[in-house]
Image 1 (cartoon, rainbow, N blue to C red):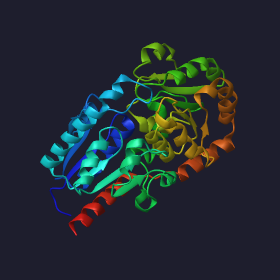
Image 2: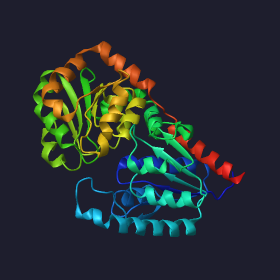
Image 3: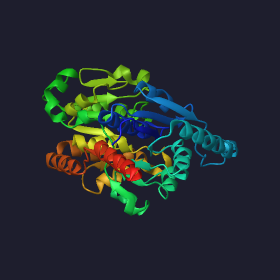
Amino acid sequence: MKEGLRVILSGGGTGGHIYPAIAIADEIKRRHPSAEILFVGAKDRMEMEKVPQAGYEIEGLWISGVDRSFSLKNFIFPFKLMSSLSKSRKIIKKFRPDVVIGTGGFASGPLLRVAISKGIPTLIQEQNSLPGITNRILSKYANTICAAYEKVKEVFPAEKTIITGNPVRQDLLEVNELREEAIEYFKLSKEKKTVLVLGGSLGARRINRLIETYLKKFREEEIQLIWQIGKLYYEDYKKYESSNVKTKEFINRMDLAYAAADVIISRAGAGSVSELCIVGKPVLFIPSPNVAENHQAKNAMAVTEHDAALMIEEDELTERFEPCFFSLLKDERRLERFSANIKKLALPHATSAIVDEVEKLIEKKKK
C-alpha cells in the first residue's frame, strides 16, 4: 500500500463512539507511520477535547440529534444538517481522503453521506448489538460494516457485515498475571473477595446509591470494594473510603482494577462489554435506562443469553440485588461458569481486524 495514506474518522457524542475511533487511528498509524489522519466530530461534544488529547486533529460540525420528545430544538435540525453537509463537502474536498471511517454519532452521518456520494470508500464500525439510527441509514450505502454482534445482521446488509468485535485496550489481554501487583496497588487483602464497581467516567447515580445502601452488608460479608464513583458524584461518596472500600473518582490503571476484581458490577456500554469479555471475570450488568433505544440492556442480554453474566435492570434492583448478587458471590461453580463463558465471547484482535478491512477497501479502490 502506498505511503501518504489519508484517512478521515468520524464519530462522537459519547466515549463509546470516540475511543473506538482513536483505537483504529492508532492502529493505522502503527502500520503506516506517515499516514495523515483527520477526525470530524460534533462541535461542543466531548470528542473536541478527547481527540486532541490523543494527538489527532479534529474538525467540528454544527450537528446534533433529533430530540425524541417534542422540542423547539428540532425545528433547527434541518439547518444544522444542511450546514454540516456543506462543511463536510469542504473538508473532504480539501483533505482528499483515501477512506472515511464512521464509528457512530451525529457527526458521522453527514460526513459519510458526502463521502459515499463522491465514491470514496467508506467503513462503519458499529459497537452495539442494536445499531443506532445514523449507522442504520448509512449501512445501506457504506462499503463495509464491522460489527461486534451477530445480531446486527438482522438490521444491516449481511453480505457486507463482518463480525470483528469492538476495539479495546491491548493491556487487558493478560490481566490475570497482574493479580499480586493489583492487590498491592489498591492496598487490599489477599484473603477477601474484591468487587469492582464501574459506573462510567461521569458516574451512575443509581449504582452509587445502591452501593451506599449495601456498604454494611459488604463489610459483614468481608467483601472489599474498588468503587469507581465518577466525576459527578465523587464529592458525595468519597467519605466512605476505608481499608475495605477504595473510593475512586476515576481509575487510571484499569488493568490493575480488573486484575484485583473477583466480581465486577458494571454498566453495559458496548466498549465496557467488549472489555469485560476479554477480562473474563464474572459480571453483574446494571444497564443504564437513559440511552437511546435501550442499547445497554440489549448489549447485556447478548452476553446473558450465553449464560455468561447476570443482569438486573435499575427498576428491579430493590427487589433483586441482595438475593441475586450475594448468592452469586458464594456460588463458586456459577462464578467459574460465568468466567469461562464470557471469555468465549471475547474478540481480542478487533482493532487489527478492522484495519485489515480498511486496507482491503483501499486496495480494491486502487484496482
